[in-house]
Length: 253
Image (cartoon, rainbow, N blue to C red; front, side, top):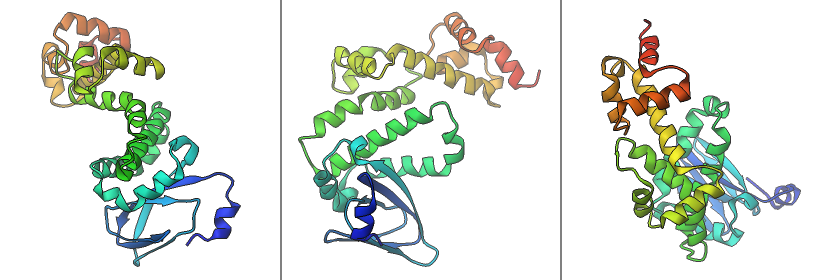
């Protein structure tokens, strides 16, 4: 239960996105009442009173996002609250939050934790705009989340040797110039993004039981490198040893 007194006491407006991971709950806010089942998402405007209760043994996990970081008016959040399940992004965001919650201890100390946090806020923003059905904020969200979406696209297509800037831009309905501009705004490089992800994928493959039995050229091809020599040079530059040395070390030799 959150009362008007609680709201008045808080210093900054916050939005809460929670998911029910055990049992069932009942949520009510601003005339909206929701039965929250296992796996459902629940969007809470923390600037207004609400009520929530769950069955014995029930439980939920929550992500708190300051409203100024979300970058959306509170009325958009309120319109989205009863319509989260109608958004095609519902299951995607739910799976993302669940994975973060499950691996919180490991992820919080990872060098990429800050970038992961920023990407998570972008996904929440996209979900809220999608559920609210507000076309005014759609273009801004698409622009803000472009780099995040491209990174996920790159990860899914690492083995494609034709993963060029033109192909990536075409897949996301933008021009190559817009794509480069978005990456420049994020202080990153698309080409470096592709190389880094491919090298990390190759390193993981070489360390795996199956990868330790494969040739270096086969691992290189599987990760999108057409030229094994080029792959070997890039790998040594990134990790200080050749792919073969990494493979042998992983095999205990």
